[in-house]
Image (cartoon, rainbow, N blue to C red; front, side):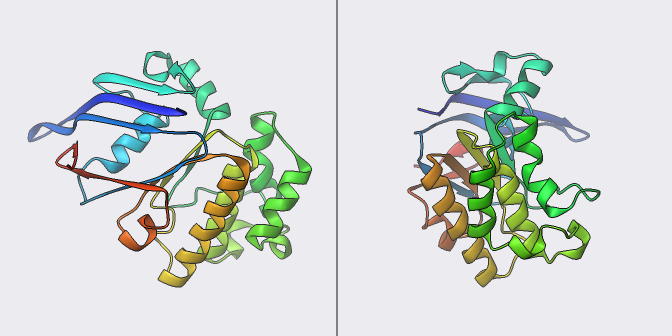
Length: 219
């Protein structure tokens, strides 16, 4: 398994008191497998994704990525993990405004010391962004920015990709195209994908689907 979450709990303190977001969630994701994580707003989907990506720590439980228990890593260890072992695609794209498309696509791969010009060329062609390489993020449409964000994440060939509503800002047709491309590219590279989505239509495109309800995996 590339990802194993066992009995994960997570709570947050608010002005109204403590809120329990995850209540004993367990799931496994095999290498090269795609898994959709669905559920109503507030069910804990994004929180679970952030924990799996080392962006936060659980209150209890264990998170194994490639056999390493990342919840026991210190801040520096988790930063290194995020640089080399996982790629995250957000709904907001998070492209670097001062870099053109070509530099944005290669940024993570160079940071992880995995820059492969042949793989980058394949990504650029598959994503249809070859004519955009000299443009900057502000010159791109939402769909174009999302394709660049997908390319940037996949360029480093991380064994695990986490995607949080990556097509949430796109219209239905553009969302379908973007996800189809992402699924084809992750499969060809043997990358595992955990995708958070509200859309049953998109979730049905993946190998498996798990639904969260009230901070637990629904039966």
